[in-house]
Image (tube, rainbow, N blue to C red; front, side):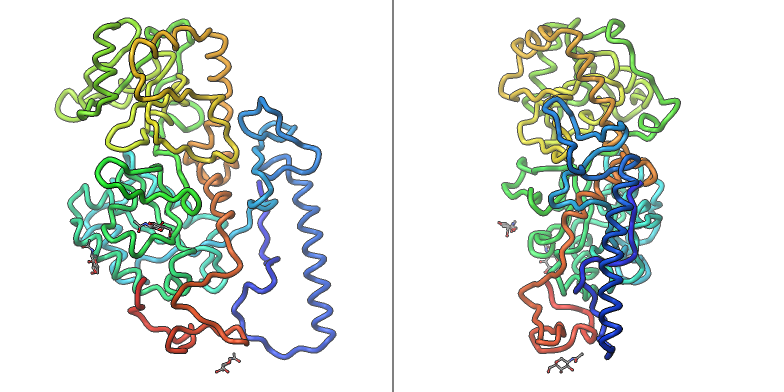
Amino acid sequence: MASIHSSKTRPFASHHTVTPCTRTHQIGALALVIITFFLTRIFDQSFNSSSFSTPTSGQYRSKNDVVRFSDSGGSIFWPQRGYGTHLSLKIYVYDENEIDGLKHLLYGRDGKISPDSCVKGQWGTQVKIHKMLLQSRFRTRKKEEADLFFVPAYPKCVRVMGGLNDKEINQTYVKVLSQMPYFRLSGGRNHIFVFPSGAGAHLFKSWATYLNRSIILTPEGDHTDKRDTSAFNTWKDIIIPGNIDDGMTTHGSRIVEPLPLSKRKHLANYLGRAQGKVGRLRLIELSKQYPDKLECPELKFSGPDKLGRKEYFEHLRNAKFCLAPRGESSWTLRFYESFFVECVPVILSDQAELPFQNVIDYSQISIKWPSTHIGTELLDYLESIPDKDIEEMIARGQKIRCLFAYTPESDSCSAFNAIMWELQRKVRQFHQSSGTFWFHNRTIVNRNLVEFSKWKPPMPLP
Ligand SMILES: *[C@@H]1O[C@H](CO)[C@@H](O)[C@H](O)[C@H]1NC(C)=O
Ligand SMILES: *[C@@H]1O[C@H](CO)[C@@H](O)[C@H](O)[C@H]1NC(C)=O
Ligand SMILES: *[C@@H]1O[C@H](CO)[C@@H](O)[C@H](O)[C@H]1NC(C)=O
């Protein structure tokens, strides 16, 4: 487990007022800082082997590694540059009672939508990440010491369940943000939002005005279908894995177990609706031509013949390759599910963005094929791949799939901890925005020279 430290090694990060102290105090304090620093290093070296960490000298990545693993196996290395040597971050989670309107974004205007119903399905990550942060060792209850701020909201679920309409979601977000002095202070740069559905941050209509500087966690790398503007920015946002059914990711007995390669009925499959999408329609056509190679069953996702979870995964595991064409947007959950039924995912979605690319080499565990070449050429190619190579890809996928599972924080290889590493890279010593100013004595003021501690909501935005 990565060690965390209560002492800040970033020397000028606090906003405390300075009380007078003697020279002895100063020297003492300095010595303490230096000692803490070295002790921290020593601890990290000794605990490295059992955790996620960054490489120490002498451990280099070989070209054949999917991810950087430590010599002892289990732990995954994050590149030291930009990530630090250990996880040490403090995240403040806004409380639903602290900010007027936040409850509506969580439970709808009447407060009737339960988080339990929002934790299921593709967008369940907005609930899971929130709940895990509340329990997390990275949580702080003091805003003054927070590196980052988490704004909890389940807008996708609330909207689907009729709890708020688009107009209300937009207005509620604006109202919520205007009550956050720290959001104003940084221009939103150290605030985290989760937008787990295909619409991404577009769910908040005026996101571009208010959230275009904030850190957005989303499985969605683009949204090129309806609008030309993407709410995802490679440099400030983080791609997160989709929400796979817990019954497939938990240790021990799973809903279905993978089949041996030789027992699989089909070369490839595609499980999903056509939704009028070109790539998907091509696949369905192709499966009619080659029914024993490619399975594209007509699946009912609602109504009386609705496919159960178990049957769904039973279908999915019955091919060597699981095809993941784009749908309404570029990402598909099937890509992540493939690793748990152990078929090799074939991405047929040109714009897809994948998570944790700083540690995972996707060419070793998946295939990406141009969506413009969906046809017999694709099936011929897949058929030409020897079983041995497929087995190897699957074996490498088994090693890293823990990074796609929202398992407890105590599992060092988990989606949650991987997201924490990515967030750590976003932490800054200082934040500025066009509406923030400061004096010689580090007093932060607004344009009217009012001190930060006296800023009163509603704050001017953005
Ligand atoms: C969102 O709400 C804000 C504040 O009420 C408003 O100024 C803005 O026009 C709204 N955006 C849309 C797209 O309706
Ligand atoms: C968001 O900010 C980026 C960088 O400042 C800018 O290029 C982009 O156009 C903005 N997006 C929108 C929709 O305003
Ligand atoms: C910092 O300087 C400003 C402007 O001179 C002054 O009003 C303020 O009281 C000072 N703050 C502290 C904490 O010394």
